[in-house]
Amino acid sequence: MDTYTYLLLSVMLFFPWLTMYGLRKSLRKKMLKVSIMGGLAGFVAEYWYFKDYWHPPTLMGQSIVSIEDFLFGFTIMGIAVSVYEFAFSVTKEQVYKKRKKLFGRMFLVGVISLMLFNIVFGINSIIVSCAVFVAFTIFILILRPDLLLQAITSGVLTVLVVLPVYALLFNVVNPSYWDSYWFLARTKLGVTVLGNIPVTELSWYFTLGSFVGAAHSFASGRGRVKAEQAFNDISIVPIDVIYDEVSINP
Image (cartoon, rainbow, N blue to C red; front, top):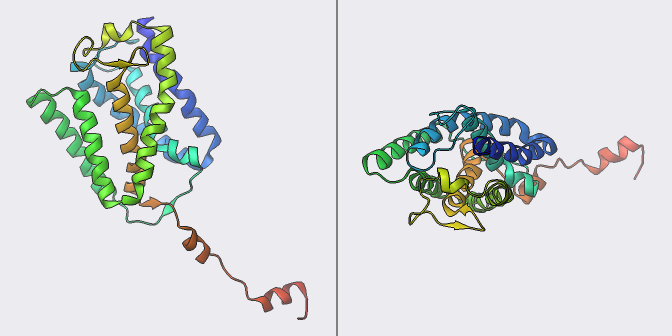
């Protein structure tokens, strides 16, 4: 069962991903784009996590990269970037300056930070990741304070989506999984809650969800249109034109 647990995690997360994708047509393009990017990033991220955080068996054995890395990155990134707009039926338009180049630089800084603090200073990769997500989220909110609610809510909702999957998978299907493949087990950082769910996992999902939930709107310049602005955009037809159209003489 251990060999298939990582794959099963990705498969179970695919169901909420598919639900959001199927029910909200307006989210599909964004979800696919971000999910593919997340899948590719999964190969890079897990390379670091496998060194000091965990090293699960996969269909390809305990290899450096595996198909599970892509599937997990694909599903969780798609969920995180869309869960807020899906839950609250939010529709956004571009009302702010696009910052795609700046976001690209942020990604590069994130990779450099992971290498610096993990390799040079020996800080665990999961701690560095969470810290980078928090730092980037704060930076985004300084430039776009309107995204505060979206960031926090995205983090909370991402955790809520993941919790049932983790509870079933690691409390029922494979309760001993983390003891076997989690490098932090039986250490000060190896705290679990709600059975066998690591606190570091929930922290990672929350910080990732907060960052990703705000990052796309930040990079694309999209935001909610205020009610008064939306009202002002409505074309007002003169009353005499209406009379002429329906052939009514006032």
